[in-house]
Image 1 (cartoon, rainbow, N blue to C red):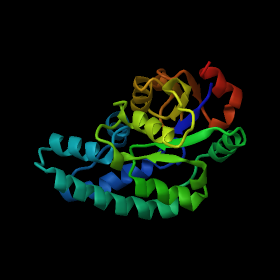
Image 2 (spheres, helix red, strand yellow; image 1 turned 30 degrees about the vertical axis):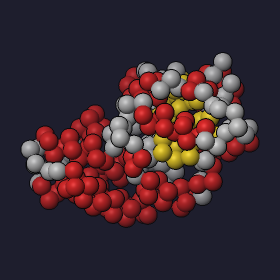
Image 3 (cartoon, rainbow, N blue to C red; image 1 turned 90 degrees about the vertical axis):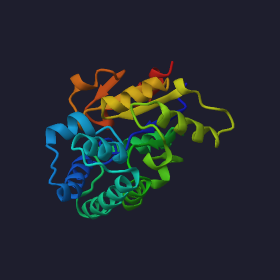
Image 4 (cartoon, rainbow, N blue to C red; image 1 turned 180 degrees about the vertical axis):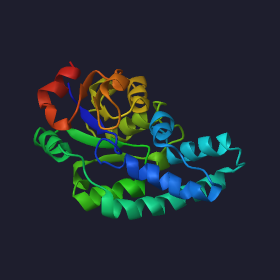
Length: 226
């Protein structure tokens, strides 16, 4: 039985991966570092801001401590918010998909490696905030995707509001990266991939792959949980 649909955020709900990429590079200019587009999508996209900056700093031997990395995250968040105000947009088909879920009384949550403030800003601005009972963000976890912790925490928080607990195998996760798919599968959840950031071949871990969320029916989701 379908219990909940859990969405990744960047690359699933909002077309913002390129905005994160540009924000990272804006902050990294002070170190004369620039991430190539192909390297961002190949290596960094699926991780939290902290993990991304740490990986880059370690690779460049910058010798940054955790506090300095957190300062960079704050700088990036400011740049990102400015870009999101003018260039952020909700991906086509997302709103209709959420309305379909709402009409069928399906619980929805977000599990993302983005910061909570960034997620809330876009959801409020787009009028989508009320769809979601729970948002789990990078601020709330110790181990980011592909570790299962983010999705397990999302389920734990969902069940705090449920009279009848939702089981992991009653959850369908919508992701756009193999890191997210690995995390969801490790948490025992069903997976759907949308080809917004990667092509279908790179998302083969998913049980179902679509180009747009409006291709999915409520029956598709229910069938995954049988």
